[in-house]
Length: 459
Image 1 (cartoon, rainbow, N blue to C red):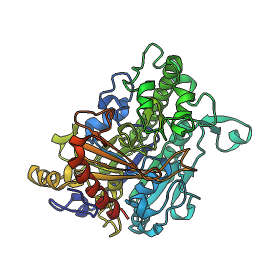
Image 2: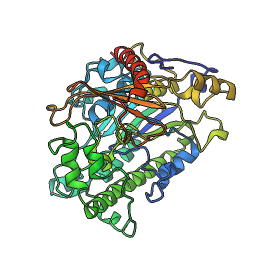
Image 3: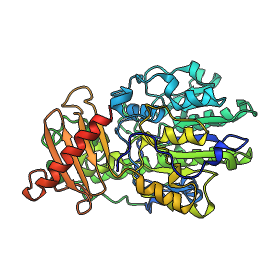
Image 4: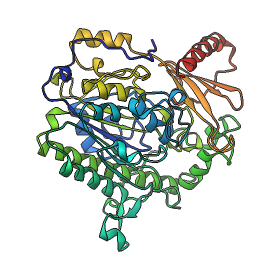
């Protein structure tokens, strides 16, 4: 069942009756897909602090984004809306009134609201935040203050970590707070030929590891893509040529990508340590997630954008002090989405999501009694609509749409009026397009109908 509107079930949430409102911390990384975590089964990558966070909270392995590109996902985070409604097709300021975003609603309720790091939604609205430190989208940037004036550089992750820690020095002690830390890493340093530029003290990591090459990282899988993707003009292929075009390049790129992830993990650890040191850990809702997935050379591609699994699935870990301790370290396979974050944050603060927010409060999935949680899971969505606009032109990044269910994925490419159909339960790598398979025609017809309905509801 797909629910665009907010549904509230189960007992009255504790935050609504607590004398002290929950603080909110959103740890939001970039270009980090669902399986690039130790707790998600990756046996090589080192993410001890987020793994420990997951051991305290709950992880959602099927979590996904409704548009796989940084600017749109960030607008969705703030508004709880699909791109079709908030109106940011790429990197512009969204059209939804600021008063309807979760930072604005929390601030109106007396929260001290802060944003650190990447923005990517037009000009940053400084006046709408109590504390803000926006940083460049490069790996090595000028240091702040006199050091920066003298030409000293600092790694973007170290800078964003320090900016987050500085927030704790200046925040008013008597007010609840909402801090969003939008890390830039492990996003590539696009203008740099090296693409991934970790800090020097990370270069000893992964030296003796061999990163497994994905099964679909081959020329045949690339040629199996629709012809408008299977060419060297597409941006996903161009970036593949910079990072993954041979075994040596793949190993270098992936190890440096992993190093950037481990650096963000360490920064998250220091922020969480600060929460604990200030006695805030037991009264803070903590969310770790990212803006989109990432191709690690699967299908001969790099980066994101397209509606395949590697691109749309992202990690989500939630630590909620109201949660029963018996659920610590568990996973929940509900189809959660990035549109759900804003309603979840607002309800945790005792605030109401706006009527135009399209996500759902996730907390009934992990709060309340076993019976109420079971009821929430039963009524939760089982499919969702994905959308992505054309970027620059159709030869660069074409528009795409999809309907995703647990069993099937229907893809539609509007610029070319072409369809794809994958049976995910037997073809999780999306290698066999069944759109022209006579045995799948009934399924295709049903999915087209459902797709059209959800596409309309997303507006």
